[in-house]
Image (cartoon, rainbow, N blue to C red; front, side):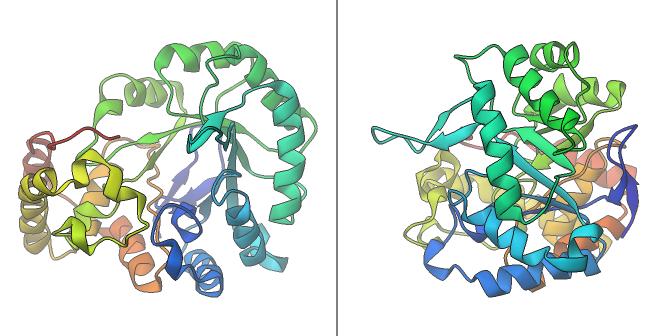
Length: 318
């Protein structure tokens, strides 16, 4: 696995990480298999995939337990372990709510460490900024976590440049996690150029368009009944059918360079900056190996230009 540093001051890690959310949350929950998920996480480490990303809300809470089981013993020292705080189970029918109160951060890190079976995480991230709590207060609490030795560095998720600046005034920002893929490019306008200039790692989630860019989904009916993608605008049948044209172009490039569509989609993300580390999610060993192989795919200038020219997808993100 090709490696780079997690931002200008971070540790050396594999350029492709592993997002663990789908192992216990959001995707095909009836086929949850914790034993296989543990094997996938350990297999990732064997492939040089060192950044393992989870969050307390995934499950909720069960995802950290699965990751903790996978990293028990000597596996822990091989991983750069990242988790998140700031989203909580919702009430009144909401899927999730926000909680950026300092007391919530202080309590949550201890609960996460217990579930993960470790005395510290390598990266503790604010999952979403709580609009009811000034970011300086939440970020100050995360800085306290670092001072206590419970996290080595802290990051943000789904934020704009102004929020990053406000956080930086309190404590260094090690990473920013936001969606980035061939069909979600918002971060390219301002956030990614800023993080690149500041030496902040950028961690794209859903770099495969929630699986769509792999070319394996041609109809919404193929998704499990409890899969949350069924509710997303881009996966409604009319939009999905229109978006298949994007996948067709990805397949053309893949055939030309001798790679899979997933590898091409990830290689394009990797080409967006020196501190860009996509965290595709999977709970399948075969897809894990496919994703890790993207680190070795080289896209030429003509390939990148063709992918850059792809039109915007039909449908909003959410």
